[in-house]
Image 1 (cartoon, rainbow, N blue to C red):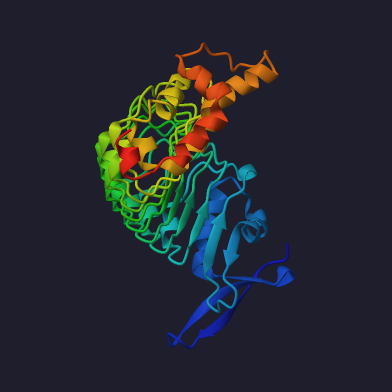
Image 2: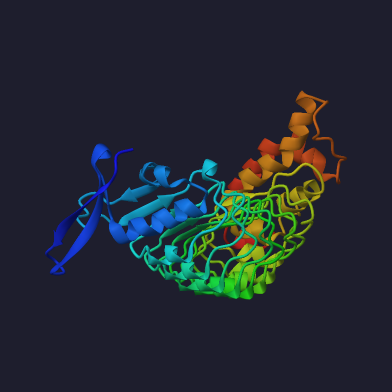
Length: 352
């Protein structure tokens, strides 16, 4: 690698002059102050001095037509063996996206992470993170926080509720055992996934305060019950409860989900009884009464285990007939759907 040279560029907008580090052979330039931060990060990751410049060009992104050449994105690749982030990372004030995907030896973030006030996306998937610093609550522009596959992360700080712009919180396959009550303050949150979080047994009552929530996935989690407050999620469209083996019943308030259009309930074991109870409870269920567009989907999921078993008796979909509804679901599915759609969904339906 050729030695780098330093040139000066005019910043007419601010009336000042900035030093910009230029790599001649790669036609690559980066603000010198930002480069010092990146260099510290490289050295902390075990990158040798003579490799720092080449590695830097691979992990940083600069916005097009940015005369100041400030670091816009920073994406560490797995073979960099990141053990820690230097406190100076907080000086990357223009950073919009920080990706630490597959940094499984990175156990914590410095408190200075909260100084990244322009950050929009923080990706910690497959990292070794054991906790998040309270300063994370200062990331007022953060829109997406990806904590999937963080097996060592057992809980979130209360300050998570201060992320005013957050609209996606992804905790799939994390080690979390609980969600803090402050999560209810995330008024812009639209997508929450706690899928396959086997250690998570309950959702806080404050989950009902997520007024903007559109998608909620708890599939494969250890959830044993849903709080009644879930009925207050008036914008919820997609509720994924698949493979929640410990969830044997739903609260009556689930029928209050006025915008719900997708209710996924498929499972292999205990939830079979839940399917039949939901889909065929003598049409007395709130869900059936208020959500006719869900009937075909619910009936499809309810009969699927039996249909698969008939096609291939060797599958795992072997369940005992839960009750007399079996005959109606399996043998009379089409006629039952026709009956439901031919009925009035107003006064007559309410009197079923």
